[in-house]
Length: 139
Ligand code: UDP
Ligand code: MG
Image (cartoon, rainbow, N blue to C red; front, side, top):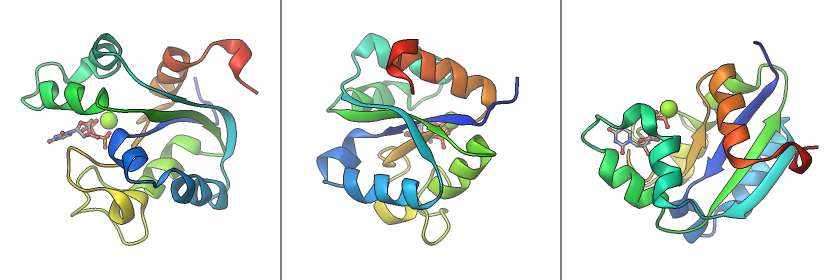
């Protein structure tokens, strides 16, 4: 199902380092409308479920520990071509490979602590948005 929505998390390192405002400003300036948003903290169970696709990967344990280490900002965003345009805005997973001006180039510390999440497909955007928000929290 094609949608014009994506899902994002400003990850614990970016929240801890005070980058929420700058990142939201960049997201808004890039034409995304905020459909739902909250400051929250994932439990170990939440993180294991959310990143379940990576459970066999060597970095899974560290990823779960990192994603539960502090608050995150979870949000659903709307824009034409939202999934692809947002992945372009955040840049490559490893900030060393991320293009100039992307959120990860500007704010990520490492391939693990990389400041922000963006859904990789319309299907996953819908699954991930529903994981964090109920229908009455969306606008
Ligand atoms: N990750 C990691 N080491 C790696 C690859 C990924 O710690 O070698 C972490 C990183 O936080 C990344 C997340 O796992 O954002 C999910 O990985 P994925 O390959 O889906 O990257 P993304 O879609 O976030 O760019
Ligand atoms: Mg991914």
